[in-house]
Length: 445
Image (tube, rainbow, N blue to C red; front, side):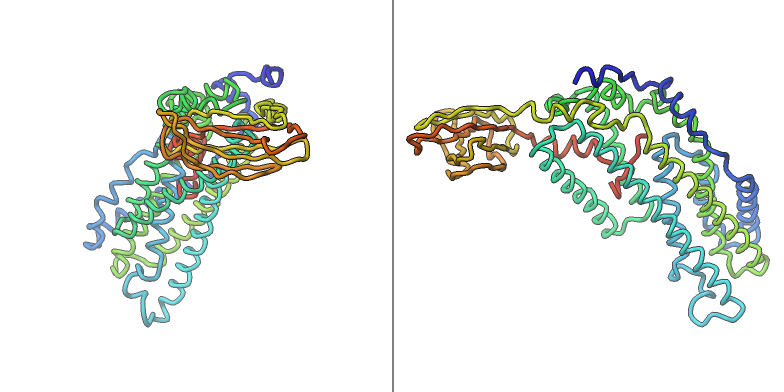
């Protein structure tokens, strides 16, 4: 394995700069700045002539808020703004004159609004899918360095439970009357917790001291990289400098669109405001935003797919080492083979995987040995040729796994096996720290 990872170099800014040189991003369309100015101009005019629009003062103040620094926070902000726009474009939020028996004059307006709603929903779906793909890619990268055996199955199960838990938090918030903004505050909080835990994984601090032993083939350069994942001036700053300005402008554009739409709805029936003019500005802006944001997502998808921190198991030397931690034992006729597994965490999984190479079966059972040497059955005796299983430990202590060949008078058995304790910390810390979800889908930015 050393030979496979010897050629890997530190993932620092200089390294990433050389990689990103291959992927220049074309500037946003020139009309974006023009449309941004028009959106601001029309919002200001609506405030001047329509008393109803003045209630949006706090919302209008968002015009002056700078875009976040981190790229993934900008993606979440765009997602929030798109969802806010879709909320306003839904029929139940339309101005009263657009609801019910709509006049022939307003029927085309309603149809054009519906068309924008469909387009923005498609864009939201694309953004959600983009984030989910990046989440899966990062999770798969971490799994690359985990033991490629039964433990991997449990880690995936842990992740599924973690996803459900996080989604339940979001569902409970919305069921209790939370706003769209409240939801995205929670989602970003969940995301930042993952990022902190990913950095802890790289530095092997806190609960992650226990876990690092599972990263059997993870190159040190990758651990050092994830250790600096949150640093404002770390390696990922190169990505922010290259691709941040365009995304920051798109975030500003999304905020402006949401503010414009909210203000227009408040002033929709004001005679001093041209509906056709407002609608044309909105349509042009939505189309320009969709075009450039779609282009940005497609571009970043390609960049992430080829990113140098996503190396293959073969490059990391994992494939060749997958079987190295199996142990072997020869069990004579009439004898047993025992393994004592010390379990340090209540609720940890006691897990095993074994098979006989001799084509025979063997008795197998597990028991807990307490401090007074008394035993308690934990897994009942049964005969197997091969078996994979686990149970959740009820307490800290020594667990004895016994392979029993006492019933055989003639045949020795050749056993290959793995046993392990999988701490509960993996569920709440590691897997959450390395996934990046649907609601929590993330990128390494």
